Amino acid sequence: MTPAYVVRRIGFYVLICAITLFFAIPMLWIASAPFDSSPGLGVRWPDWTLDNVRKTLSHPYALHSMVNSLIICVTTAAAVTAFAALASYALSRVRLPGRDALLYGLLLLSSVVTGTAAMVPIFVMMFQLGLIDSRFGVALVMTGGLLPAAIFILKDFVDAVPKSYEESARVFGASTGQILRDVVLPVARPGLATIMVWAFVNSWGNFLVPFLLIRSIELQPGAVLLQTFTDEGGSANLTVIPVFSLLFSIPVVVLYLLVNSRYGFRFHGGIKS
Amino acid sequence: MSATTEPVPGRPARVRGPAQDVAGLGIGRAFGFVAPALLLIGAFLVFPALWTIYIGITNYRLTGVEAVSPSIVGLSNYTRALNDALFHNALWLTLLFVLGSAIIGQNFLGFALAWTMRRARPVVRRTVEALVLLAWILPSTVVAYLWIAFFDRDTGTLNSILGTQGTAWLIEYPMACLIIFNTWRGTAFSMMLYSSALQAVPPSQLESARMVGASGWQTLRDVVFPHIRGHVLTNTLLISLWTANDFSPFLLTKGGPNHESETVPVYIYNVALQGGELGYSSAISFLLLIANLLVALLYLRLLRRRS
View 1 (cartoon, rainbow over the protein chains, first blue to last red):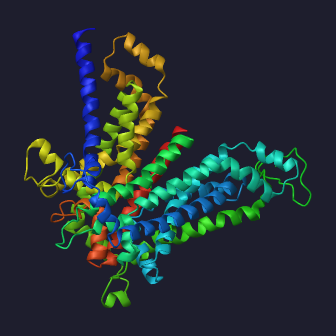
View 2: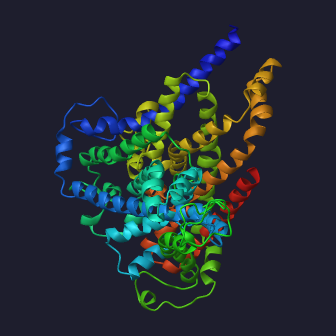
View 3: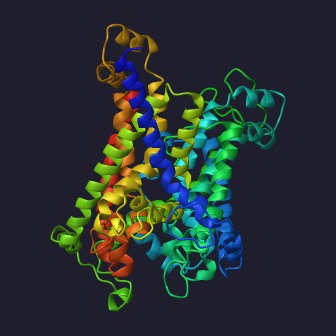
């Protein structure tokens, strides 16, 4: 072991420590502040209490907004998964005229038409359709935005499923419906689960669309409501914000861990829109 | 159904595309399968994108006379953008934001992580990767509060660490804060992409570089980089596109103070929904769409050439 080697090793570990601290330190707040008896914006060892949790749960809109988030995200995830599954299967197995151009277009759309670039026309359109303040409207817009990437990811997945399963079922006289229900669906389940979780997590964290389209506080999902928590004096309500942030993050982390442990992390170019 | 199996009675044998339609879906039903998705995409993605062009040449407003009967004003929204100091400011800030947080921040930190974690012990590797990924998957509103707390003037963690109580980082250095924030937020993608790209570098070449006594930097430049050049390009394009369209600066600074952190997405929102000028903001949105389109076309070209 030369001195130069020792110095390099030390430098290496210092670098790793610095990077770890950079990623960890901002997160400490969400671990300590929710359980502190006098929560502030600083990080300190908490004076343990569950008082904030009780106050958050009794906040008039907190649980309400979680339900709103759930309604919007379940609708979006179900719609994205169902429509993407149908489309990706057909695009993978049937040589539709213009298929390649369509796929290329979808790939472009998934990254070009972003929420920020389309926020004005989407707002105007939903306004004229009378879909402002509609959770269904929010789910529709999110579904449209997530579908191109979802179709792409799922098509990759279906392409990798051997056609021999369907062929053998066909040889034994299964109808198309039976093949889809009893052969394709079970085989594609990991892909469908991944897409469903992906769509759910994306819509759960989406701030812009509900922020644009939902005005009344009773209909706001958590992502928007969290921005508006203030106390009587008009400053940020630090009793509710930390606990709500923590509760609001849990579903995302749990779902992510679930997919990760059951199916392994799959790396997709467009996993985040 | 493959060409060699017997066609099931009642279904026409397929002529085109050998061994394709194994479940016997048929063109008609296949169209039926694709149609709902295409309808939704058409209504909520393609139509808004095209409609931006039309709204962008009107003087449509959120309120007032022009809200009821907007009129066509031709290209005057675009000529206005040419001379709008605040739009130029937004463009410049977006450029800084993309350059600082995506092209430099996420790219380099992501690569450094992928490169160092390759040889780290599994415990270290898993811990670090979990933290980096957590920063990526947490909801953006939550992340915004984490960083507002971190940068806070009175009790913020950064001031406690540096001993600089009373420095309002988000007000005094808003762009620097946003760049650090977005580097933290988005590095996970580059890390994962480079991790998988580095697996394509043959270990034997790294070994021989070590044998001839090449320094770490020489190894990176002459052995590793040629293998991952394509990944670097496509990664940079993708994260730049996402960063330029990122709305989370709004959650941290709302574009302030005094437009000092008003990137293009925030500017579009402020002009459209705060100022009510839907026509003008549509024109700017259209410019953003065109920029996105150019980057995405370049990205797909590179991707195609690589495969």
